[in-house]
Image (tube, rainbow, N blue to C red; front, top):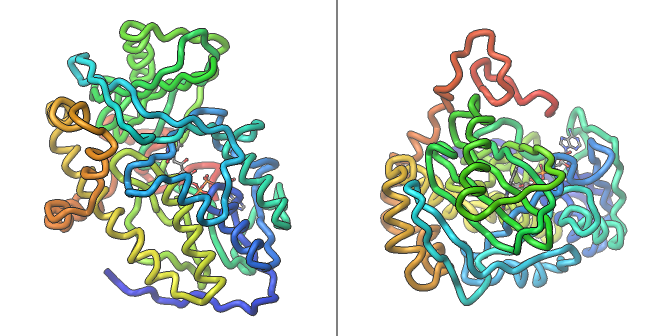
Length: 389
Ligand SMILES: Cc1cc2nc3c(=O)[nH]c(=O)nc-3n(C[C@H](O)[C@H](O)[C@H](O)COP(=O)(O)OP(=O)(O)OC[C@H]3O[C@@H](n4cnc5c(N)ncnc54)[C@H](O)[C@@H]3O)c2cc1C
């Protein structure tokens, strides 16, 4: 891996710090810096936080580390002032429709809502930032990062997409996932229902051009298998970027969260990486510890393990997932099994060089013929996703 070609700035302690992007990464970093007595300005392109989300449920995973993710946030000084549901069990289906009960003593993940609505993760973090004295400038799109110290603008290209519906429902609470390439090629479909709200989606790692078909199949599957009932449904979608960055410093600015590609390459869990990279950047700016050494030590082993997992998952396909569900996740404590899956074990480290070669190959979406392509997700002309800086 190449070394960073530029060093992070060492700002004077009384100089105002600018953070570009009011997503979870940018806001958490801003809160920590403001609490340390720094003057912080966050520049946010849109008129509100959580603009790219739709009040959909997301899972804040709680398995990649022994410690609980909410305790990790609390220890860093971030409180859970947003709606959060601890999920300890659920049902996973294989591609043949066989259900497997998944459970754990400790929470497997915490369900949070994303968007600008009251109770969402994004609104909670915004409130904490404002309370800490952070100035948040909405409608302020940064064209260049002249005065920025931290860049946190989120994903710039689509390596995976999640498409589906958010809705109201009379269904009882529950959490379901299905690993079936006919519903979500190289990905998974999920249905999350809590407190009369629901999110159903197909998370695709290829086949983006046929997203409507996969969503229809996903909805049909959950209707038949668990009685999915949707009222006032609204379509939603979003994209995710995975990258193993050579550097997390650009133009002398620290880069955090999904902008730099910090994301679980197996399943697209990016929130914990957003938080952790924000902690590390704030620490670097507060006490001068080298950010590059920090993220390489704390995040890189996990990122690499996730790339090896993605490689294995692509090879294993539906049959591989059936084996994992039957012999690992539904046997014993699922949180332990997931932690083993995410651990940078000897096998994953040995596989990594090969996995990385495959990972670096540009995404070729075989469902796109690249003729007169107007496909938002396609990289055939190597565009950034429209509407994004
Ligand atoms: C549909 C979907 C489902 C997901 N589900 C999960 C899940 O269940 N669990 C999980 O852990 N992760 C999930 N993720 C990933 C997770 O949402 C992201 O990893 C996380 O939001 C990244 O946070 P961030 O702060 O880096 O970026 P973002 O949340 O994208 O925030 C970036 C902010 O920067 C602003 N911005 C952009 N450009 C500029 C500019 N030029 N000037 C100023 N501001 C700018 C944007 O408006 C935005 O507010 C999901 C993603 C999607 C799309």
